[in-house]
Amino acid sequence: MRKLILFLLICISAKVNAQVYQEMPQYGYRANRMAFDSTLQIPTVCGVPTIKSVVKYTKNGAIAYDSCNAVFYTYNPKTLTWTAVSGGGGSTDTTSLSNRINLKVNISDTSNMLTKYLRKTDTASLSNRINLKVPYTGATQDVDLGAFKISAQSFQVEGTNGLGHIHFKHQNSDATATGQSTVLYANSNGDLKYKNAGNYYSTLKTQQTADRVYTFQNKSYTLADSSDLSAKLNTADTSSLSNRINLKLNIADTSLLQSKSISSYTILANNTSAAANATAQAFRDTSGTYTGTITWTGVTAPSGATNHSYRLTQVGKCVTLHIALVFATNGASLTAVQMTLPTGAPTPIQPTGLTASITNMYPVSSQLVNSINQLILGSASRGFLRNNTAANGFEIFVTFSTAAVGQVGVIAQYWTN
Amino acid sequence: MEYIRQKIDVTNKTNQIAYTVVDTTGWALPLNEHPSIVEHPEIFEISEDQIPVNAQYLKYI
Image (cartoon, rainbow over all chains, first blue to last red; front, side, top):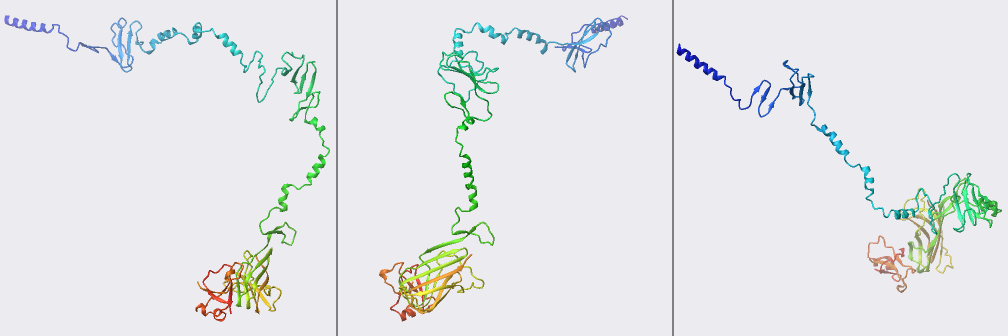
């Protein structure tokens, strides 16, 4: 039994040792919803916390952390309400900042504050110097330019209630309306008036709508405009002058007469069956030394010094041509001569059917004489203006019975385009 | 090129002096056999001078 009791005591002792206070674990003591470590971990909720325990909830305060909104809450057991902890952020110092700003100097105060520090010894001089300048606007005193002039594109006197005026003084000592002084002004109608030294008012000119030229008429110094001067002009002949001018040809009409320069080798004519304005037609009259090609048929061609010439006159489409072949020495036993048209002669129209080689087109008149030109040869000559052998040009061909020709005269008339 | 010309006074050969060249178109024989030379050697001669631009021509028959 004793052993049993001993055993029991030992066991009881062992049991009792198990209830001995032990040191906290290394990482703190944990209670429900709280932990004590290097930090204090408190009840954490999402949103506004609530009291779940009913123990002394009207006596003990509480804290909790809303991890969803990062807000720390305190519980007031008196009011039974949870309140988010605030303060300590950016807005908490606004009052302090405002107070600090209020302690600064206002910028509006600086002029008064700094006035006593400004140097004012030269202000009177500056003011005087400024007063000597011509005021741009708002002048409050006379501007004395002395002998200097005002130079501007326009000069305007703009008074108030009819007081605008220009005051002319003969000299500076003349007072207004006394001595040699005159005031020039415009009344409410725009009439130009003046008041002289005798306070005598007079109208120089009434207001005009058109530009006028004013001048002094005589020693009365009355101004007169151009309408007044018209009576002084000699206008007796103006009507006659006007009529005479009307009878003249307007420069714009000269083109209708077509009497000015016209094209070369033209003449003005009316080639119609009715009256009409003249139109340009071909015209030329030229002459000179004949330098065309001459071809004789016979035994001996005329020789020696030559004095060939030609003249052609064209009126419209008709051409008259004269060629004179002049030699100093007669030829012998000749029966024909042909000559090309002179340079510049109009191209003949080839009559219908007369276009082939050496086809005769227009008859010519020809005469043969001897070299002295005192003997008309008896040989009858006949000739034509014809196409040349190659049919690419024209020539005058004259044939005659055998003769000793010294000179040949040919007149051909043909038509051209 | 040789051709036949009517004899002239060579000392007075100007533009105002007639210069006549015999038309030998179609003549295939030597020029010295041309009728102008054969029949009237006193009037015509063979020349190699340059033909002036204002020369006249003669169809010798």
